[in-house]
Image (cartoon, rainbow, N blue to C red; front, side, top):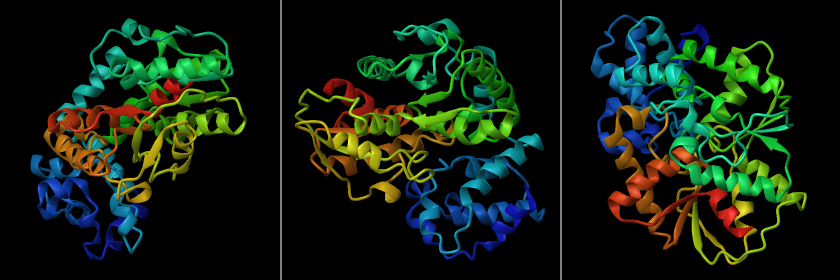
Length: 370
């Protein structure tokens, strides 16, 4: 771990304010599963007073990296960065990652996606099979391509209706490597970054449009650190839709008579403060009423899936998702809307288990209103 982050570890004065924010702690109800507990474990590892046992690894990896703990930290400790770097350090020392995360890395490097699906199936749902030269690249992402094709179809309907000249990488698109970055497997992402960047340049791309906040974070923040030349503008679909709306290019002519509540994805919320653009888009849809959950924007609860939690601790992720869906149900909304395919998956799983309101992506609602 870099020396500056070791200093950050010692800046935590164990006040415990983070306990009330941590979604993992709400499920586990044990001190070692919250931010304060993790910092104590990390300090003990640094000082050589603790071995990286499986029990310790579970606690360091069972964190969705949602940054909720940082919203209440009076010392403003860079907690999420510490967790990410300790995971990277564990991998470098061959003490990590967890077996499930290592298997995902093997699948991504072999198949280009974490789902063990053939590469050719990635573009089955695309209208624009691509790739071809275009200024705008719709970077679809693995979850949308293989698990939520309705999002792909919705984005392409929007792009077509607004006459945006765009392309996809089709079946050639590779996983961005987000889950690998969040689980400390940074070296494995370097190859993906180089291959994807080479294709971006080959087809004259200037702007990369993502629907997945994980892809957005990885392409916008991590790729410029991993490749020498990354001259692309990366934009999330919620920002892009807001821009189209402001320019008068997005015409939402159909009524959508629903009461909806909005769930803020952590990666574009607390990391990038992207709170108002999706709400502005939703509020522009005729007949739609937006109601807020008590915890929204920077105080929004995590869906529970990120940071490798859903893949390695699926029961915990589901319990966190159910808690968020119960909060959504209290608003009496007909539908929960979010701007993240992975949030859609976990909250959708939670909704089905608890028999609560359905879940949709922002793009699906916008496409319905066109």
